[in-house]
Amino acid sequence: MQAVGPVLSGERISSLDTIRGFALLGILLMNIVGFGLPYAYDDPANSGGSTGINLWIWIVMHILAEGKMRCLFSMVFGAGIILLTSRAEQRAGASSSADIYYQRNLWLGGFGILHAFLLWQGEILYPYALCALALYPFRRMAPKGLISIAAAMMLIITGLTIYDGMDTKKTIAEGKAAEEIKKGGASLTEDQEASLRKWEDLRKHVKPSSAEIEKTKNRWRGGVVDVLKVRAETVWHWHSLAYYHYRNLDIFSMMLLGMAFFKLGVFSGTRSFKFYVVMAGVGYAIGLSINSYTAYTRVANNFDIVVNIYSGVTYDIGRLSIALAHAGILMLLMKAGMQAWLTRSLGAIGQMALSNYLTHSVVCSTIFCGYGFGMYGRLERYQLYYIVAALWIFQMIVSPIWLRHFHFGPAEWAWRSLTYWQKQPMRKLVPQSLAAEAS
Image (tube, rainbow, N blue to C red; front, side, top):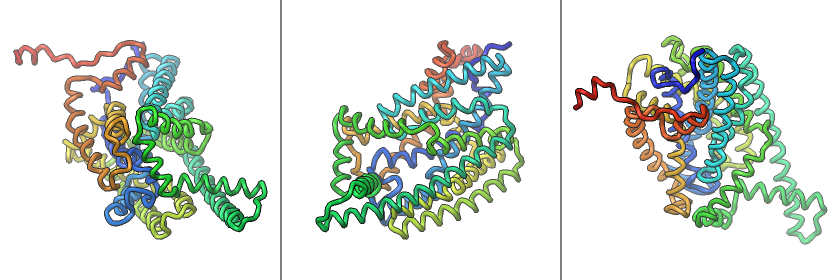
C-alpha cells in the first residue's frame, strides 16, 4: 500500500478550493458584525445604525450572505470528508483512513478551542470538528440516503424554530404581565417571579437597554484580562450546548448534503454547463424570494423578537437555495474559463482557508478589542465593510503569491504535521532547470 499523507497541490480539486475560498470571504461579511458591534448581528436597531445605508447593508446581507456562506462552507467541508477518506483508503486501507480522519478532526477541535477563547467567540472550527467526528460512518452511504437524513434534520430544526417562537411569545406575555403586577405594588408568586426573570434575561440578550449596550462596549474595550473574561462567558455558553442541539444539527445537515453533492459531481465541476445554469437560476429564484420576504417582515415589524424567530422557519430553504446558486455561478465561471484571475485567487484562499480564517480573527480582534485599537462599538455598520474590503484585497493578493513558494499555509502546515505526526515539507523546491536559468 502507498504511504498515506497530505494532498499535494497537483492532486487538489480546484473547484472545491474556489468554493471554499469564496465562502470563507463571505463568512467575514457576517463575522465582522460580531467582531465590531454589540447585539447587532440579527437586529441592527440595537447598534451600528438601522436607517439609510446601514439598514440596506443589513437587508442585502440577510438576503445574500447571512447563513448562506456558512452553509456553503459546511457543504464543502462535507465534500472534503469524502475526498479525504476515499484517498486515504485507496492509499493505506480503511484502518489508516479512520486513524487519519479522527486525528485530523481532534486536532481541529483543539485549534478551535484555543481560537474561541483567545481570538473569536463565534468561531466554527470546534463545532465543525465535533460534528465531523460523528460523520465518518456515513462516508459510504449513497447520496439519496445522505440527502434524506439531511432533510429530516432540517425538518427537525424547522419544528424547533416554531416551538421556540411559541415559547418566546409565551415568555414575553407572562413576563410583561408579572412586570405590571410588580409595578402595581402587589407581591409576585414564585411562578410569576420566574416568568419575570426569564423575560428580563431574554430582553437583555436580544433587546438590551442603552446602558447595557454601553456596559458591553466597555468590557470589550478593556484590557487583556477583561476581554478574555467576556469572551469566555460567550464561548462557555456555546460549548456547553448538548451535542444534539439544533445548532449542531444545522452543521450536520449541511455537511451531509456536501457529502452527497460531491458524490453527485456537483462540487467537482463534472456536471454539465446546463446543470449549473439551472442550479443558479432556480436557486436565486427561490432564495431571493424567501429571503426578501423575511427581510421585509423583520424590518416592517421593527425587528420584533417573535417575528425574527418565526422568520427562521424558512431559513434553511432560503439559505441553501442561495448557497447552491452562488456555487453554480462559480462553477459556470470555471467551466467557461471566465474571470480566471478571480477563481485562481479564490482557489488559493480556499487552499489555505485555515490560515486565512485565523488571520481574520487576529486582525479583527486587534482592531476592535481593548488590547488593540479598542474600536468595538465605535463604527457604523457600513464602516465595518471597509475593513472587510481591505482584508479581501490583501488575501486575494497574498494567498496566490504564498502558494507559489510553499505547499501549505502556515496553519495548514501545522495541522497536517500534527495529524500525520511528522513534519511536512513546507517550501516548494525550485526545479534544477529553473535554478540554473536563474543563476
